[in-house]
Image 1 (spheres, rainbow, N blue to C red):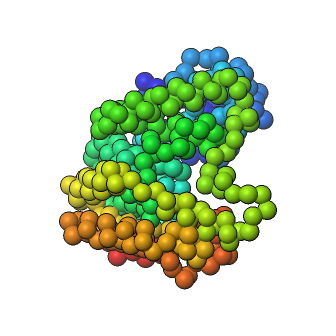
Image 2: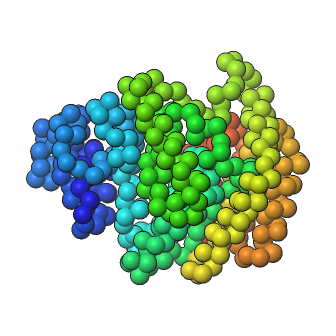
Image 3: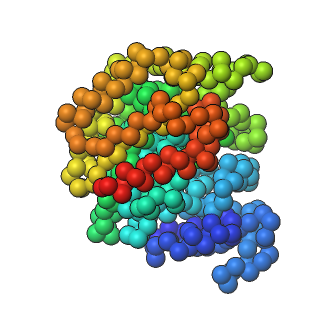
Length: 359
């Protein structure tokens, strides 16, 4: 039995409650702004009181995960016990009527509008998530599906043109404590057994990073003192947007690691084999990028990616949606240097729907 505290009593909480399994016990509800109210027959506790209880996890049923995590850590809660409620539900509950599609990938895939898809989807993508974590998430998810005698019909695999050169556990990003990493470390904790099963080296690195991260959080006392680390952090204040976007493309293309490429080809092949064994149709999707980014990224690295994918297609049957240089996505569809805004993701989701409808 898992004992949980749910933080937040809004609409997000209602959705979580609908899908919690019988082996989950809710020991309390907590909310900074609605403490003292009655909810589901229980008095909503202030966070300071709730964290004194005996529990396994605090499930954050709110979009303000980073801010709430910061608050809970300052109250003495161990970081690995703080989880986004949606991740906990996806990992522990597989309602057949909800998740006929799975989505994995980096932040580009995280923005896919799951609720707008023709087949309701479990979006397991996350910022900075590499192919190895994608595979661990998928396998863990399918293990849970078997308990329900259910399996998805379609798997959407979000890739970037630098995906084969990217290893989260070797990147500088994971070594820098930041608010961006709070959710990522929580997700690592959920699939730690799968990580250990497939790669002891990565498991040891993950544990080391988590330990260092938690220690530095406690030393700093507040997540507000932790900086956001992202691909825009190297850009100069006042720098021309087009130049900055080109520099980001160049930075992404500068990843060139032969061993990592070979490992990721093997991982993606295992991923596709797992889908084939479970009769799940794969769709690989690459998000669009603007002209300046593509100039910085260069044709050489783009061609290397295409050649790798072509080689994998000789072994596995999958649908490819490559929007990298699509003219359908102009500046109005982008939120920042390389990510789409809501309208952009709606357009991308509609394109994805057309392909899913043919499956």
